[in-house]
Amino acid sequence: MPMSLFDQPLAAPAEPVTLTPKQIEQLNSKLSAMRHDIANHLTVIVTAAEMAANTSEKARHHLSLLFQQVPRIKDAVNAFTTEFETVFGIRRS
Image (cartoon, rainbow, N blue to C red; front, side, top):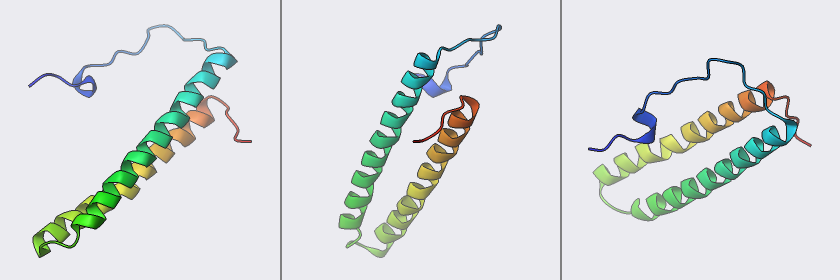
């Protein structure tokens, strides 16, 4: 099985990294786009799961577990967003 991007070791830079306000703005824009994409994907998952909920009891149980993941994913993304914005001094307008 090939190694995924998340399985690869990550090494932080040895020296401090300086980002310009423009670079921070670009990163924040990418983060915003990622949040939007994740929300769209979660909507598709929830819709498909709701349609499949009319099946067996076992399937409904598994779908219940699936539904529980949606707020967990949203909470994780929101927590990262909050930390990202705090670290880089980003204020929502």
